[in-house]
Length: 289
Image (cartoon, rainbow, N blue to C red; front, side):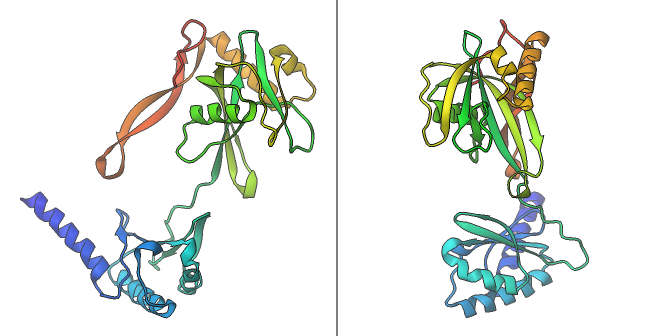
């Protein structure tokens, strides 16, 4: 009974924070005494009406000890941005369809709202065939022609193995299966001042006829691994990736993902892929995907 009563009190408190004033904008409360709002969930008669309701809401949120306010403004509601900026909201991040703005309300606490993502995720495909030949590409848009691994940025919600296979297929027409993670690089001062984490996945080719994408790739070939290591048009980083791969064979181990459960939002189980060192099986580990 006590637990049910506590839950009911929490619901009442949530309703009170949102409905303390009929003009208050409705949002979703979080565990950190913050509130999130979306412009698409709010109705207003005019921009003047929105500003009036925002003013009333800020007053109410301060009185009820709300700390952080997250306001997602859809592209079609961009006229709200100057109003929010006038009320001391600042930009947090932007996507093609929306911009996120925030305001920290407490005056006696430093702003503890987490920043937006600071790293790109890139994945390269280390595709080695039975002839010990490596699949390599030369890109169309480059200042200095050089040979490199096919690869690119991960899409949101995409696992590393899936990114590697997709990028290799898009750039070279070669279908592959995932074997293991070889290594990764962490680089700073990348695009727009952000950092970049570049993962290299060992892939096994399922097809062999190269069909390069003309929009991205100037040339693509199967190159003997020793020739790749000694080629003057290969960067030291890419030569070192080969060394990492060969070391994994000598050590008879590689990095494999395993699905591990954890706790997600509100205690719901959430699956994670944990990459860790595993012994090789028959020279190469079993394919994950």
